[in-house]
Amino acid sequence: MPVALHKLLLFTFGIVYLADGNSALLSVRKDPRCGWKPHETKPWSYFNLLTRIVGGNQVEQGSHPWQVSLKRRQRHFCGGTIVSAQWVVTAAHCVVDRYILDYLNVTAGEYDLSLEEAEEQTLPVESIIKHPNFNPGRPMNYDIALVKLKGSFRFGPSVAPACLPDPDEKFDPGYICTTCGWGRLRENGNLPQVLHEVNLPILNYKECSKILLTLRKPIQGDTLMCAGFPDGGKDACQGDSGGPLLCRRKHGAWTLAGVTSWGMGCARGWINNLRKNYDQRGSPGVFTDLRKVLSWIHGKINADLKMKSSTASCSSQDGKLHGNEGSLHFPESPKHFYENNQLCVWTLLVPKGMHVLLNFSHFDVEPDTFCDYDSLLVYSKDDRLVGKFCGDDPPSPILVGYNSVRLKFVSDNKEYGAGFSMTYKAVSPDALPDSGCGSLAVLFKAGVIQSMHYPEPYSNLAQCHWIIHAPEDHVILLTYQSFETEENEDCSYDSVTVYEDSAKEEEIAKSCGFAVPPPVLSFSNVMLIIFKSDETETFGGFRATISFIHMAGKGSNEYKWQPAFPQGQHRRFSRES
Ligand SMILES: *[C@@H]1O[C@H](CO)[C@@H](O)[C@H](O)[C@H]1NC(C)=O
Ligand SMILES: *[C@@H]1O[C@H](CO)[C@@H](O)[C@H](O)[C@H]1NC(C)=O
Image 1 (spheres, helix red, strand yellow):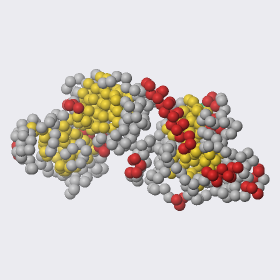
Image 2: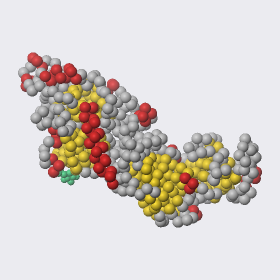
Image 3: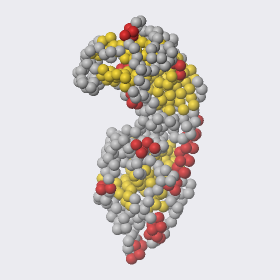
Image 4: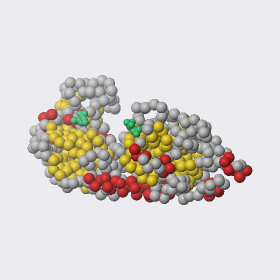
């Protein structure tokens, strides 16, 4: 199994949709997975806005991965928006029926209602929380509810959360946002089978209030947010209720600005309202302004998390795990989230003389470029840091060349994740020379390393990594015994590269071809060795010995060596200063 080193060294960062490398996004503290469409790599263009919901377009499959369909006995009746794996936001008026839990299902990854698509995930509902100020007699105000699923959605290309707005985030009048749903394509029109969307400008609140006062039953409320075109022609319609009004924030993530609530007819326009009969008048689309109910949403979700995670803190500080193999799950169930402000330590101990192989199967720790918020730290012998991990890709397997490993999990006071699961097992050091090819090998002893299958040809697309730690006051000498790799002028096809540190920052030597390269001496007591091959041509590979050399008297140009392994081989080298 290839090991991707960029994920290993000090962080794993889980934004998979960020193909344009938008670094501004990295400053968004909340779930950085939110608000990205799977294929969205180009900056958003205003050109595709005013194309011809009512007056909208059919969307491409997967282009609103946060959109869900609330279903009653398999039939769509309202929309909703995924904001986390377990929570969906919808309109309160969609879920007023007191027996609703008996029949309600929520489907994510839905596109064509008449088909059961491979990406679909349907979950029943555990509970529904309507906003306490919601009043069915005045259903346009505080028209918002939280739906807690029984189980969690698995995120992927067709299922992903939208972002919740930041408390100070505003979408000003004129800003063009998008609403979507399976609602009617015109007033009293047909229900479409596939998801539609329409782009609408946000209206000024005062203007909107004035328009709403021209209706027979004047609409007023604290949470109203309006969007639409005065001439009509584009709008949300019946069946869209509960779905999202999404605005794209500066860095590009799609943010839930409003929940589709109400409209007078659909797409009627309101310019000449006062000259029309009451029953002919129109209104903009009315949405529940998310910013007005944001603290309520956060409060409910966090309170629930607190309850749930009471089982998810580390029960035993410095828990010791013994034996030849075992597993560690934190929290115990992947359905739980870990708590804030955790510091958990586990020590894995396998029999003396054996090495420990860690293999992660599930990983979900608050992502950050440097894993500065929540992280899992792996320490080996003498408390040396092997790696610091976060994000949602499991780290590659890690082989630690010692019989104990310490794991430390820390979380800060914000955000959360579902933790990690891994297995560990004792492996014999005899199996080690090509260990770096199936895992990241972190070694503490002098010995031999080699490419996989040596002396048989190595595999194409190999990625082998060894990190060597020598004791303090030692440097590391890598001596090739044989060498046979694809020849290339700058060694860009197949090569062995030696770095000064485990962060791949300083390259000491890069070798390829068929001549045995000169030995390589490290500058400190750490050395990183990477062997990689491309997709064509394979040869016998390499075998090399690792030895440790004691440096007496730091600062002197000449080192007095005390060879550790193998005797005498290093004597040809003197270090340049
Ligand atoms: C909810 O969905 C599941 C899975 O599709 C289905 O088996 C079940 O019958 C649905 N429940 C209702 C009440 O429709
Ligand atoms: C890690 O576990 C997976 C199964 O979960 C297995 O396929 C893989 O071979 C294991 N890797 C190592 C290096 O043992």
